[in-house]
Amino acid sequence: MKTIDIRRSIRNFKDTKVEKNKLEKILKAAMQAPSAYNQQAWEFIVLTNKEQLETLSQMSPYSKMLAKAPAAIIVLANQEKMRVPECWQQDLGAATQNILLEAVEQGLGSVWLANAPFEERMQYIKDMFKLPESIVPYSVVALGYSDQKNNYVDRFDDTKIHYDKW
Image 1: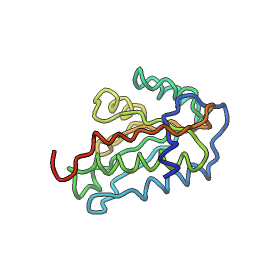
Image 2: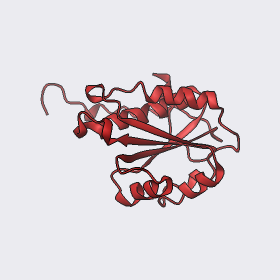
Image 3: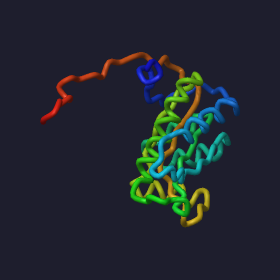
Image 4: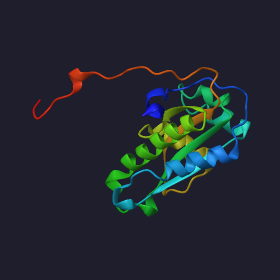
């Protein structure tokens, strides 16, 4: 629960490289996510190249921090691997959440940048990486060592809980 409690969206990063072994642990966590009918129709692009991160930062007005992030993971859906195509966004949402949580475990900060369902953002990534038609961008996660501490903020609100009725 501690990892969940201290996870925050981090948009400012130290100029420190993220180690490859930490990125691999994060990707392993992503692939442990639940998936409808165990389809696991996800793919990932890992970026550590500063020029590519700068280019990706132009994806939307909300992605500027990518220019200063030492790493990013783009979460993609592979339509050719979908057995339950109605559930791909749920599957990739779970994979993205696992990325965020494992980043905390690895001592890193992260922020989830929405891509799907915004067509212009999805097309930006398709064009940037010349993706095949069957590959659909879902999210981008900026990663790096945070220049701030992740502190617990209690978000529990019992007024949003309804037992056995509305």
